[in-house]
Amino acid sequence: MEWVLASSIKSMGLTGKKIVLFVPFGDEKSINAFRNIPQVTIVLFDQPNAYHLVNAHGWVFLKKDTDLFKNMVAQWN
Image (cartoon, rainbow, N blue to C red; front, side, top):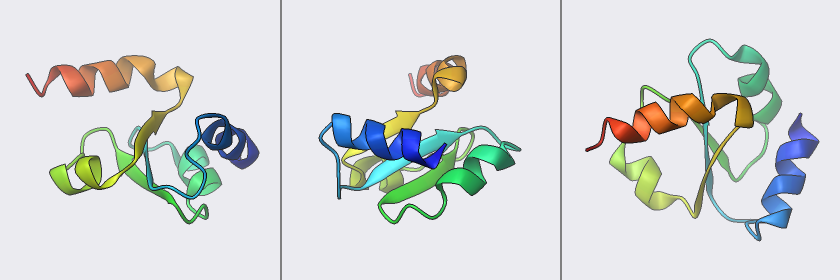
């Protein structure tokens, strides 16, 4: 899984830049797969904060979590 994120980061032109990866609570598989990538900060969908959102060059979420991302953003309005 880590290589998928690494190749996605490269294709988006975000290599070496700060990325926030949103994951759902309890998704230990994703958390363990991505926690060792230095430029990636893992944030749970129910815990975003202004610092993480503003300090990142890009926000990333897994395709399987699209609805969770939409619900998170919808709560900001």
